Every structure is written in structure tokens, then in C-alpha cells.
Length: 291
Length: 202
Image (cartoon, rainbow over all chains, first blue to last red; front, top):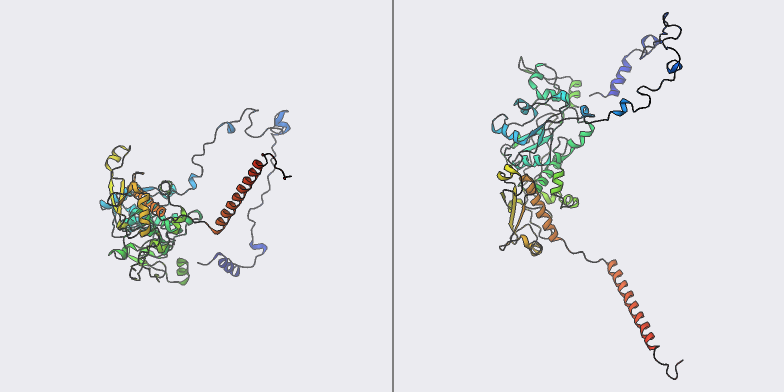
């Protein structure tokens, strides 16, 4: 992707020379209109004598000395900045096990947010500042499925419970635009727009998703392997060997940090009607979507 | 996370950090670095490095416990909890035969049995239990933590004195001895001076 600086330089080279005839002020200067009314003469709307006419009125909200209304009422900031915080609606391991047992989720393919939303029993609402699924610990003891799982938030116990059964977990961040496509891929493909490239997590989430102990998607593989062994020692289970597993190819499948869907790259356009996948060929497009 | 720290507070952070990759995973096989371009489905091909049969070093306990050599059994916990505590097996018991354990250095086995004689059976099985939390997995982690700290305690060598400490000790002993002798001499002279003076003394 061309940097801002390159874009700016290209613009400067191509645009005409700056002159008085092709520039405009940012905010047009408007003269404050002087209000002159024939009717409002003599006291000019101020009344007679007093603070009103003498320009000594007290501040707004003053009630003559008693504690004013705006100080009397206490602050109850229970939901302060609530609208700015990321939310991860919870899904228990018990629910996930139930989905698997009832066949609502296919364990032979990687399970990510799309699979969970396709069940119809788990909903993510982007307008409510939802950023994905939070897999909780309830039911970790009885969890007995071998899956390749991708969630947005989870804890150590959950990771141990999944890995104990021979599965793998990854925590992965999706920005709201990518998340919208992920939740309802069919609706997204019907719009026939290019698959977006997933953005990196914001500053406060970067540490979480780069940490191997959280199985973050930005963490190194070697660190994750060490953490797997450490967790097996901590919780006292024999770590199943992923290499020896016949389903290991599926278990090792991971999306690239910029990739949204398995098997599809950013920049591709899916045409459902004609059952085609259109891929960009120009080097600028490829550079943009690969960066 | 608060719950986990309360369960596994016995081991210090130093000990946990000392459980390096070598000690935790002696049989780790290396992943071959995938050379795929961006956005392809990554399939990690593994260098099938044979798992090395690392000889168990009997010199020092590294912190690694082979879980397959331990026997876990589960039962119902005690205490309040209604239907949940009555039905769910959350209590964890671990046992293993201490004299035949290959992962504990030979010289600390006797020390271990001596320290934990309350928990060792006649046959030599060390038995540990935990029903601290509501979850079996957390109780199992608690029991592992207990076991690890017990073995570390048994392996701890008594701290010997450094040269400086020996020097200081000897210096102080010599000084106190000197002081004692000085007091004895003074006392002796005091007693002697109480007698009547003899002819010839000044």
C-alpha cells in the first residue's frame, strides 16, 4: 500500500500551481451581522435597572446561594465510556460442546466465528460494540472435543481444556468492517465487494494478541509450543502429539493476519450469481492487498 | 486469573521462569518454517525429528514432572454446594510410588519421604489431594503445584556458610573469649586484693 507521503508527493506533482484563483479559505469569513431593530430601542431588551441592565448577572446555574441543581444531584458514572469499550459476548464451553454434540457445528473443519454465527444460536451485534466471541470456562471439565478453534477472547483454563483433548486454540482480532463480513458471509458476498484486508488490533489489544500464553495470532509458533508444554505441566495432563494425529492438517490450519476467510485472499471478489471468483491482477492492487 | 494465582501461589515466579523449553519439552520436535506467501492456508510441515530419549538427569530436579507416571483419581468434594457438589467429581487425588519414581533424584527420595511422612503410605506411595475449587481442572493444577513444591523443598540443600561469614564468626568468638578472660582476671585480682597485705608487698 502506498504510504501517505507517496500519495501526497504524487498529488503535489500532478496538481496545478497554487494561485489566488484556485484556493479557498477553510471557513468563509462571515461578518457578524449587527442587529438593529426599530422596536427594540430605549432599554434594548434589558428592562429597568438591576443586574440585568448593569451586566452583573451571576453565572448560569446560580440559584441565589443555595446549592444549585447541577451540584445537588450526585454523579453515578456506572456506564461512563461504556460506549467506547469493546465487548465480547460470552459463549460457554458447555454450549460449544452441546453445539458439537447436536451436530450444529462441524468439527472436521476449523471452527471460527462464522461457524458459531451460522448455528443461529449465537449472535454478534456490531452496533452494540461487539468485537467477537468470548469463550468462558463453564463446562471446561466435561469438554471432550478435538477442534481447531478460533475465538476473540479466552482464558488459560479454556485453552488448557481444548489442548488437553488434542485440539488447538487461537485468539484472533477482527476490526468491525471485517467482522461484519465474517458474521454473515453470504450477505457480504451478495454485495460483490472486494474482500477487505483485516486490520491490526488497536494499541490496548495488541499485547493480548501478540502473547503466546493467550495463543494470540500474532505470537510466534515456537513460543506457543513452549506455552503448550508449560500449560500441560501446570494442569497435569499429557499433551497430545499434534504431528502424530491423522487430522493434523486441519488442526494446523491458520489464517494469515490479514486474511478473513479460509481459502480466500483479500482483494478477491466473489460473484455468487455466476459462481466466479475474480482476482485482481494489477501490481498496485496486489501490493495494496498484500501489505 | 485471580483464582489461578490463589491456587498456584506456592511456586515463586523464579521457579516458573526456570522451567525453560529444555526442561519442559526435552522431546520437542522442530517445526519447519512454512515458506508460503501471504494469505495461503498455512500447513506446517514438520521436520520429523526423532524424539530424543533424554536420559533422566538424576542430579537435580528440574521441575518437570512426567504426568504419565502419576495416577490420578477423581471423587466428589466435601463442603457446601447443593446438587453440584453432590454429583460432580471435582476432588482430585494423585499418587505415585516414590522409591520407583524415575523422575526424582535418588538422593532426595529419602528426604522427601521424611518430610512428607504424613502423606506417604506404608508401601511408599505419596498421596496428595485437592478439593479447593469448584473445577476439577483447577484442583488438578493445585495438586500438581503442591507436588512440585514438595519435591523442590526436599531437593533444597542447606545453605553453607561463606568464607566471609566464617571469618566474622571466628572473629566474634575470639573477641568474646578475650573478653571473658579479661573479666576473669579482673575478678581474680579483686578477690586477691581483699586479703590482708603480706610483709614485703607494696
